[in-house]
Length: 318
Length: 289
Image 1: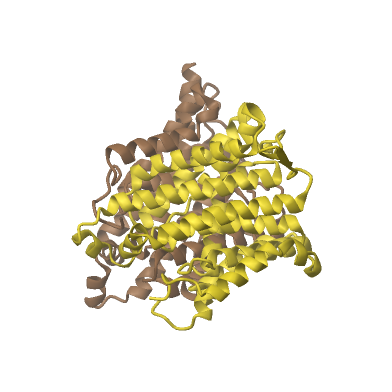
Image 2: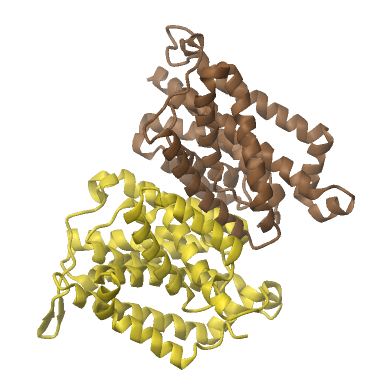
């Protein structure tokens, strides 16, 4: 099974080179550094979702909720609690992770369509809370009035506030850390168990694997990772708004994962890159960008259900 | 206070009737085809706007019938060309496809009819209140509830007594056997899909007369319909009926005491139901889970 096999070392080197050198080459092709950071953050979010969707085979369609909770947790911490970027990120990650783990416990024994519906519906709870709780969250206008803070590492201070390139590398380091954790998890016996559950849940159960526990754990971990990405998103924009929690974003994240290739580790990052760049480009051309995004969904489902990387890898049993 | 409460309970029932119409359509499609139709709200909006365009030519009564039928025809065309290809595949794909369709619907309605709200003109006598004491109950509101009730009754009679209805119910339980017995499953699903979309279109026309139309209203009505289905139990149409009325009244009553929580209360109800009875109030264990 190639899908759970390791990425070829040469490919791996290429991916990291492209990411490391992004601030240098993005400008040459008409991009900008903040767009690169956006791709990284949404790519991380899509990869976190795919930890559950592609590797555990559980259809969560409400992951924007945890992403947005991470964003709000980070923003609120910076605004009201402490002017510290790492602390704010940690708080956002905890907020989304803990609430995600709690909901996961409630629904871990549900599957397929039912799981999708419950995750969509529950995701909207947090949207309404952010939308309605004006005093705390700023309501419809979003949460403003906070800003990421410079990093203090020992005696040095790293400027990530004004220096966009430095912030890009900060995001890249965070991205690398989470991606490394995900890769290690997927290579561990735990990760192989998740894939086993995806491939044949009944057989896994007969082998004595506690399936519900594993699905809950995968869900909770995925929520922790995506909340972290949400926190980075708040830092990137110095802003959080209810749309970060809305189910439209959940759908966008799922299509990124599918577009890139759900069965591959790096696919969602590629999907996020294509999606973000396309959206950025099309919305600068026409106000009817929603139709283009919708059309992208339809075309991907009909013609690229295995994603770009799935097509590159050629035929394998779908 | 009492009048305020009464107002909100009535309001809740009327909104609940909307949720029921919309959720029943979603439920029909979900049960037989295993498709979560994210574009259902888009079809609702389309029905409303078609009625807006048709009213000058056909009058309100004509539009009330023709607009949902047209919407159903468009729905059936989409089912035949796009959605049909995804039956039997991972539900992820139909979810994504209809999700994309919802984007396209919202954008196209905005492009064709504009972003600002438009009213569906209703006959003058329907706009009048029933009595001065109950000024908030207009004939139109009674009419909406009556239409919803009649449609629901008709739907349940159809499913219980007609041949196609029996087939739909049987297909919900075991599509393979129904197919083996010689039923054209493709046609059954197409009819069932159109029936569900008809209900969406009809709710769109009715909603347009009361609230006016705007391109995003479908998305707003979609989530309550999901919750109605989950509360009532996936796979059970009577459950969907009960769920829709329940969340309508619950949010109506909450609006009296704690206005900003009127949406949240649906989710609280859903959480309680999932904790106490995970399959939903009237759902069957093991179906579609």
